[in-house]
Length: 429
Image (cartoon, rainbow, N blue to C red; front, side, top):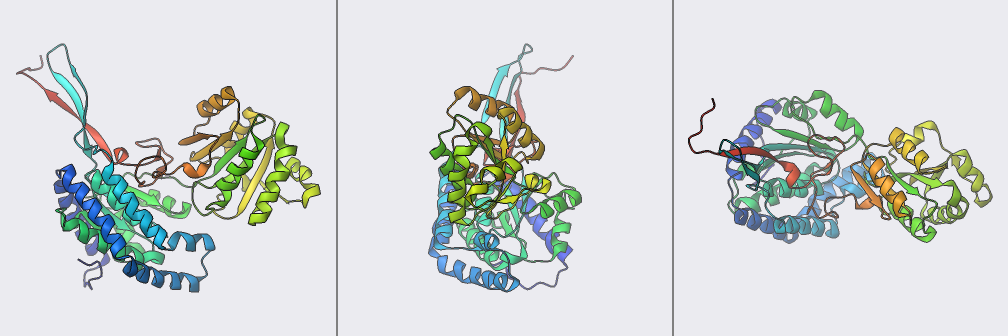
C-alpha cells in the first residue's frame, strides 16, 4: 500500500475520492470488534519499530529541507523522528490497544412510567479529518485513536513533514489492513497543495469533524473556511502561579520544567505569576536557573526591581502577557494575591492549562474552582497536560472549546451517544 501514486486527478477530485472512500470505510470500522482493532493497533506498533530505518530516512528529507528554510529550533524538534519518538509512537499505540473500547457502551438504562426502557449507547463520530503542522508523530496518535474509537481518519499534515507523514501513513495503513481493518480507514492526503485543505473543509456530506493542530494562523484559517464542525484551540498561553505558601524549591523545579523541558509545545508555560509575599525569595533563585538554561525573562516593573541586582531582565510589554512564545522566552508578573492571579489568567489566558504551587489546601481548591481552563494542576508542571500523561493512551488534540470536548481528547471524545429504547408495543397517545 502506498500514498505516493502519481495521479492525473485534480486536487479537488483527489480529496473527494479520499473522503468518499473514508465514509464507506467508516461504516465498516464502526462494526469492528475490539479484538480486531486491538490486534491491528499492536501490529501497527510493531511495524513502526521494525521499519524505523525507513521512517528516519524519509524524515531526513524533511529535516534537510527544513534546515535550508531556516526554521526554528523548536519547529525542528517537533519535526524530528528520532528513535525515541518512534518508540513513543509505538508505545502510544500499544497503550491505546490496552484501553477499554468505548464503542457500544450502554449507560443510563431506566424504565419510564409508560414501560419504555430508555438508555444511551456510545457510537463513533464517523469520519474525522485531522489538519496539522510539523509533528509527524500526530499521524500515529491520530490513526490509533480514531481506529480504536471506530472512526475512519483523513490525515493532512504540513508540507514540511510530507515525506515523514507519507511514510508513517504507509506503515500504519498496511499493518492495519493486514489485520482486518478496511483499507481506506486510514488515509493520508498525499499533496502539499493548500487547495487540498480548502476542498477538504467543504465536504460536510462525508466528513463529520475537523481537528486542526498547529499554529494560531492555521486554526483560524480552518475555522473561517470549514463547513464542518471544528474542534480547536488557538494557542496555549499557560500559566504557573507561585502562591505565598509555596515550597520555594518545589516551585523553582516546577516552573523550570514547565518552561524549559520542551518550550516549543502548547502546554509549555508562557507566563509565571508570583505572589508578592514570596517574590523576593523565589525570583532570584528562579532567575539563576533560567539564566543557566538560556531563558529570556520579561518582567513587570516589580519583577525587574527585585532582579535589578541579579543582572536585570527586560521589561514585559502588554503584548507579552498574551503571547505564546513556543521558545525560551517567559513573561513574569508579581501579583498581590490569588484574586489578582486568577484575574490575570482570565484576561490573558487561552483556556488551555494553568498550575498553582501552594501548600494551602483552601487556596488550591479555590484556584481549581475559579480558573476556567481545560486543565488545572496543583503542585505539578503544565507539561502534564497531555493525553498520554493523563492516561488517554495518546491524544487527538487539546480542545479549548467546551462543545463537545474540553482539554486533551482521547477515545471517549471521539465518540458520541445515541438514545436506545426498548418497548413492548407502546404507542403515543
